[in-house]
Image (cartoon, rainbow, N blue to C red; front, side, top):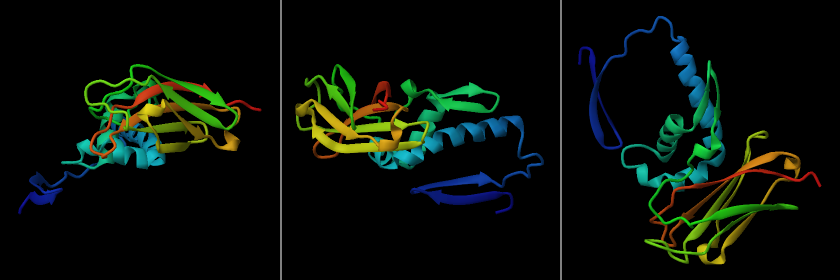
Length: 198
């Protein structure tokens, strides 16, 4: 009506004004924002199954992808002058209240990246919580995911890496999902690791 538009999205009714015409759609600020967006979406698009589970608690008023995008754009992008990269220790691929182990580490062997954790529980944690391990190769822009590879009680989960990753570095993340699928943990960043050449 006039200069006002009414719409509904995910069950939320709202109104907004018609957008003003943009004379210069490529201002420095807009270009920077688009570059940040591109940096994050490039990563998220490779790990979509992880995001759909890891950010499911934030889907009441947005999609899981939008929630992951919002969090990581605000917290995990570094750089300036239009050149941006992810600050992987600050990246979150899962956000929730499920208990995380007190310690976790990574071992790389011939063919596998293995995440191992302290088998302890507290609060809402349970021994049958399922582990989710993500191994991301930023050089190749590829990921391997081991969803529900093993339960918390087992203490470790091995994820095969791709043969052409040899000599590259990978970023490793660990998260947990409750056995009934209702709860997820915050993801734990387990560091950057070298894939052996041989």
